[in-house]
Structures are given as C-alpha cells and as structure tokens.
Length: 203
Image (cartoon, rainbow, N blue to C red):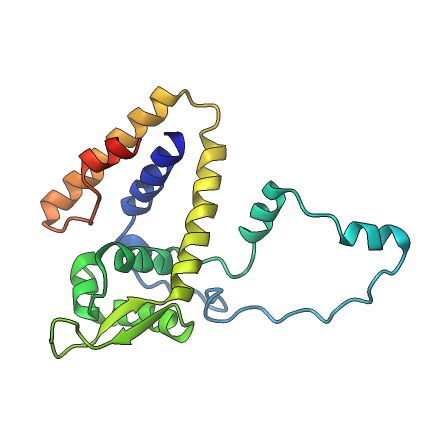
C-alpha cells in the first residue's frame, strides 16, 4: 500500500510546480543533461591485480545501483519529466494542446519539446483523429527514461518520509491532492488521474 501511495504522492508533488518549471530560464553556460551530455573521460588503465579481478565480479548492492542511476548525467530535468508525464497520462498531444494544458506560450513548449525530440524521447506522428496538426508521442526510449526518473524520485521520497507514520503520509497525500485539484478546478484544466475508486481498489 505504501508503494502505491508513494506513486500518487510523487505525482502530486510534481504537479505543485507544473507551470513554473516550464518557464524559460536563461542560465549562461548551463544546459540540460539530455541536450548536451558531458564528454566521457578517457578510460583509465585497468587494474589487473587479483583483488581487483575479484571485485569486478561482485554485484553491487541494489540500493547502490539505484543511487548510481539516480546521480547519472542522463537524469531528466523537471520540465522534460513533466512533459513526458503529461503525454504518458493523456496520450499523443499537439504543441498547442500542451501549451494550453500548462498555460504557456507555444514558443516555450516548442523549445522544451524540441529537446525531447532531439533526444529521441518523443516523436511526431500524424493525428490519429485526422487533424492537420501533428502530435507528439512518447517513444519507447522516452518511456524507459521517464520510468527510471520516476523510480529515482520515489526512492528519494521514500527516504525522506521513512520516519513518518503511515497516517501522516496518507494525510499529506490527501491535502496535497486536494490542493492540486483546487488549482485545476479554478484553471479549468484538470490533470488526467485514475479514479479514486480504482486507486482504493489497487491498495
């Protein structure tokens, strides 16, 4: 039950700043990891001592593997993760639909999705409903990156809340969800969610 609650709580925390994280930020000398990955260092000379050979065959602890994956330069930035999450939740969307969903200029969303297109995380497809505008769809690679990022976020959240009683976590989720839904109600733009009944059944 806690894992399921963490999934929903992570989503609601993501939604708190769903507009501000997409606002353009001009930072000189800074680029997102998925746009310009850092150059790899030249390979070091391998250690061929018996101790090193034995260590090479040891499987890293699962927690360590997660930590390493979650500090890699391939982590998604917040705007990329948010856009992929919306496309995953709602299906293929046009740039205009995404701009409307986030209440942003088309140029801003176009710039953000351009990075995802260049990275192969989304692709353009003809409108399945026959519309003239092409739509954006998450690619298998994008789905894998999004799932990995979600796992990292939920792992961090689990560590942060590990000392909280379960009833406090539940209360936090309920209040946060209520806050987000009120924002969505006033904006007239709801984020696609599973029904409350389905969530309770899954628990």
